[in-house]
Amino acid sequence: MSAPSAFTLGAIAAATAPAFMTIGFIVWENNWYGSAFSLNLFKCNLASVGFVVASLAARKWGDPPFSGPGAEIQGDDILGLCLSSFIGILIGDFLWLEGLRLLGARRVIVVDTVKPALAALMGWALLGEELRITALAGVALTACGVLVVGMERKEKSEGAASGSLREKRTDSAASLRRGYVASAANACLDTYGSVLTKQHGMNMTVWEVSLVRFGFAGLAMLALSMVMAARARILDERKVAAVEVFPEMQTEVHAVPVADGERDPLLGCADGPEDGRHVEGGGCSLPPPPWYALPGNMTRRSWTHMVAGVVCVTFLTPALSNYALFRTPLALTLTLTSVGPMYALPLSWGLQGDRPTWRACLGAAVAMAGTVVLGLFGKVDSE
Image 1 (spheres, helix red, strand yellow):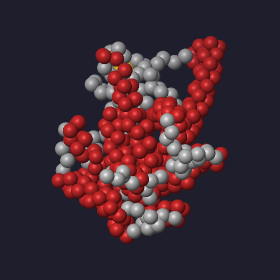
Image 2 (cartoon, rainbow, N blue to C red):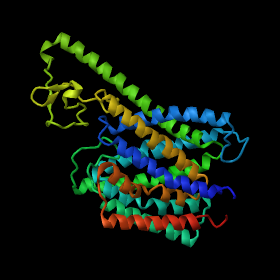
Image 3 (cartoon, one colour):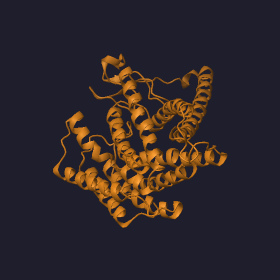
Image 4 (tube, helix red, strand yellow):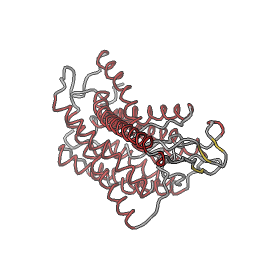
């Protein structure tokens, strides 16, 4: 029996990646009480530690780069992947989270369905990948099925994917415009970031590609966080000095009321006697954490959930996606990695009791048919 081809392994990796991402999002839900920036800061730097270990192990035990054994990493490759990180992670993730905040998950999924078409266009224009007509039909089928599933899923929390965005959303015309612009820009930048990754990662292993991209993003956010923390300390010192000279400037800090039995992640404090921070009157005794800092009010259980989510979302998912990116056409990779809502149906039903509707099941069947077509006819014409 012959071993599976590189294309087959890449297609399997692309189809498996969104399953880990969906599991990670479910594990993350209701466990992060910091800002979206601090979540990105935490997950990028923690995952980078894992990528360092995996990269060293891969080189030691002979895992060859995508271009073959003996390939040497060039300076242009590092710069290209850093640019990919800046476009796809630093800017792209911010725009994606902003779209979630302004539009909600369903509308963002609608906009994200343009990614396979953008990938087919950019793959043809920038990478020379020409898909067969049957493969393009599979891309369209999968995108339509994912759209139906995403529109049918209940929005229990608009910020579930990011783990923190629970601001009250207003559907004003201006907010909707900004949200659609942010989501559309994210789709374009994320797709182009994948193009840059494919162009500049051939001389590396899958772990090294992820290390450069997430390491660069993590260090950039860490530097910004440190600068903002230093600035805050300087301002606090000036404020203390001013109060010593002018005591009348001293102000009294009051606890902010929080509804009983709820946690307010935007407020940055927990309402519950198990945390030892509940104060009389339904308030909390901790001030809100700054947006650039990790939250200090999370329980050990919440941190455990977040670490497990990082392993799924920021470590395994990019590794599988990058492997697929170098083994399959760009359009096929981005189409298969977008089927997360389809995996969410059985996972949400089994873990959260969220029973899917018949329309969602129909959309999943259509998406599955599209993935089958892609698996059978997804190779580029030159192959």
